[in-house]
Image 1 (cartoon, rainbow, N blue to C red):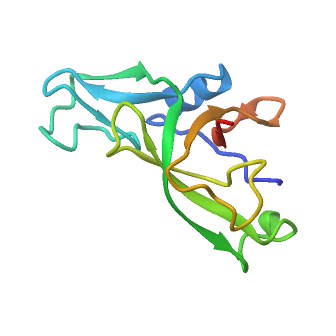
Image 2 (image 1 turned 60 degrees about the vertical axis):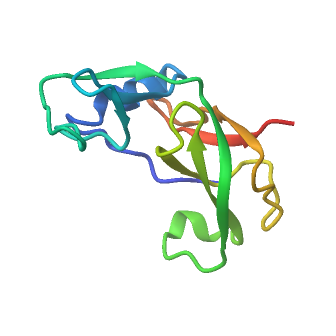
Length: 136
């Protein structure tokens, strides 16, 4: 499925650099020991801005829900309709959620509760994305 290529900004660049190295990272606040994603300039819990760092994750999560897209307004995605949009909760911190098309899982056959792992397909010669694939 063709997907839009992300354009990293100053705040998200460390995340996308890690994705390009086939690693998944999230922000961590050393002041209150809290993880967060998506990236913010300050910790959304304690508001500290000078104690944020990027830490690795296991790249594992659990599917907590999904929907099936039948009518996307994004032209690049229309050819592959219908497709899944799953919500996965990160293993280390279930409050951190990601969306995924679940490559390899047919539309509307999403195994809610299943474990998934991050994969990093290449979108262009200079950019990968993160997706999630069911662990079989």
